[in-house]
Image (cartoon, rainbow, N blue to C red):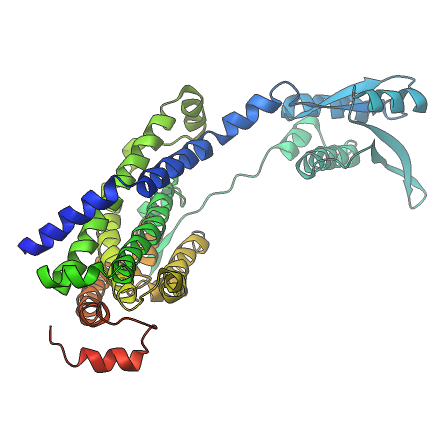
Length: 430
């Protein structure tokens, strides 16, 4: 045990103050800062010209034009309608060219079945209208068209109700002991909890990024020691098992230091005034955060880390050149990517069969079970069963990785085949 702590201390001292570690941490912290402040940074550049001015040419539909202006004023979007009375085509084109307006709308007569129909609306401009703004204009015109069609058959109150959004809610049904379905009291709560989503999303990213960074650090350090022949000196003073587990624990501590630094950067950015205003708009309630979600998430993270870390250490031990390392760890990278993507792409379907099945597969348990806990449904025994399976997997792969590591650190030259590794492993007992 003493040798393990010696390796931990040595690995931390050699890695913590290296330029590569400090630069990586600083760059990632800068990226976190930029991402969290990106909306504010963008607003600094387009704050003055945020609104788009669109001309509205007067026509034989004054009522529709007036309603269109009022609708856009109430909508408070990025479009400002500028009325043009008795405008000529030359005058409109001149204003577009000089940038006074980006384009103009024209209402033209349309007929349907011999009767006058809602006018055809055409947008004239040098550039295509933004897709989002085009959708806003279409939405407003759709409402006005509905009002125009039913104006003689509905009262003012009925027309007002027609413009109001539809009230839609969800309630869960739960089977009782007798097998009858009844409304679940918990179903009255909103199906989507923003607080749980934020925590789950953050833990998913935390798991993937830390596995990628620390796992590759473990594998690269072992390979570098082998390629420089330092391993031959280390092996005489510290056992291979103490080296492997010491490096894994050291990189875990190093990863935690990085995570704490990123959390501190994130908290500082969240406390900035412009981000505080944005958070108020999200309507997040800290009191609704489930502490068990964080506790369960950290348990899954720790066990998942050690499972992947042992694999990275064992693969790094059988590679003699750093040039071959990327290709060697590719299968493990694919596993972690699959776990991450299953979690990310199943956010909207946390109770799907894919998520339920993969929550009991050790390599995917940290993300799939986390998703079920945070956003889906699960039984307490399902969580603890997945933890038992994950723990057993850590022990099994840890034992296997220890045998591979003990054998691989002294195998030089070309990367050995699995048959050669297996043959060499039989000579050692753990």
